[in-house]
Image 1: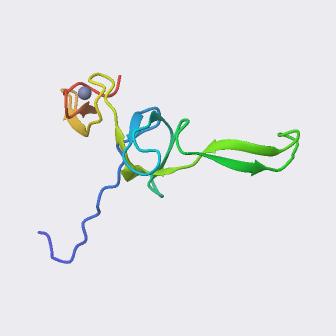
Image 2: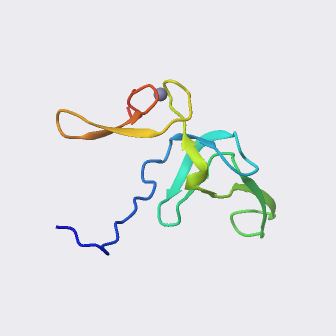
Length: 117
Ligand SMILES: [Zn+2]
């Protein structure tokens, strides 16, 4: 039995994964599409290839011979991006389907196609 006062743990956004293609929904990068390089579920942030580039000053070190300014992806809030379906190429939500063997796969809510190979 469920007692009142039990806080239901709100699910974060575990569904977006590395190598997913996503579209940015908010901010100055709105409308841009890129591949997810990194997901940080703790901070709810994602890094998307070539999106939200920021210039950073690099100090000269053994790795970077002369230092200077480098461009680097800055993280975006995971709630500001939406996955793009490979099959129908539409921004979509991720559904879930349980296969006969019990394994779960992600499916596109628009076209119903599996999102994972
Ligand atoms: Zn689709």
